[in-house]
Image 1 (spheres, rainbow, N blue to C red):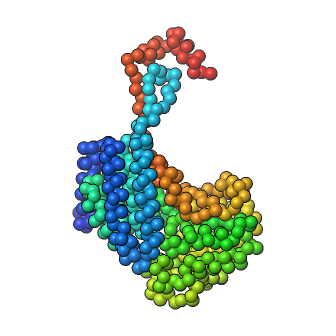
Image 2 (image 1 turned 120 degrees about the horizontal axis):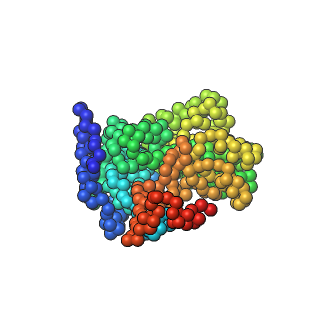
Length: 480
């Protein structure tokens, strides 16, 4: 049965078109509900060819959307990561598709049992603005590997990337296989209300609640990849220059507009000044100038820029100490660039302590003992990522055992997201469900349990009337 889409009077042309595409994909899936491994591999190959053929256009679109987006960041964090995910899925999809044999019990003998992985149908993907290509292609790859049809809603904040992706995909795929939907917030709301077989959303926790509420009307299962305040803990014995290098890598990429970027640092109280100097030295080396430096990305738009300025002003008004790392002491003018800014003496009533920062502002909180640092993390909502810098295995295990987070990098930041053989997802307020790797295939598949019996039917011997010898035999086998 094809799921119904509500037709309301006065819908915009974009929403009507979106509903039409949904119906086309539903009908196409009904006609071909189980693509072969060869068909899936062909789709992944075409997607790879598409990305490789449009590298320059992708970088240009990202820069147009951000005002300034580092070309190298786009290549590394959007294109290469997408290509690596494609290679990994193509390598493994045949194996993932194979039915898995399962054991049977005494009551089912003789029989065979297995789990078959069946495509769900039509999958919806809502991509965010911070990594618009990677966070559209990643779920798309997993959904295609699982044999689905896919509709992608791109962010209204990245119109150039949205238009480019729509054009590129149209060259390589029919709209009843993959479709890109662009449009404003009303289109996004209507998109999340479609009766998809699965809906994956990447974005803020507040919008995630709206998406989940809309999906619940159709009993659509969701994967929510949200954000949160991801902490970094520096051990007392860890080399500070090395910690600064690895923290700056994760925090300065995309100007901190990364869901798994360090949100705040827990540093031993006695080493806070050392951290300030190490971060200053490291960032000055990476970005000796900022204003006209093509390697330093701008804040996506005026709305997000104003939000970050408000967060910083609130911290200042409430007594925070601010250290801006601006090596050339430049006025950023109208570039929407914000230098990496360390914030000290942070209180819980400050916006910077309660809201996900999603920009180049980084609170530093001193701690006395590792136990205190772990307690600080546990007193707050569970984060999407946690980073701990220490070469002591016992301490690392203590942190792993006593904290909850979506993922962890030890002695690094953000890199775990790029490991295609590991699941990526949040926990609690930072999300639910996961994808990447085999988990992505499973997320977009239905694990169908199958039991098959042959000509022999031992069931006859166990039918009523009860009390015969066969029942006593079964009881002796099982009730022990």
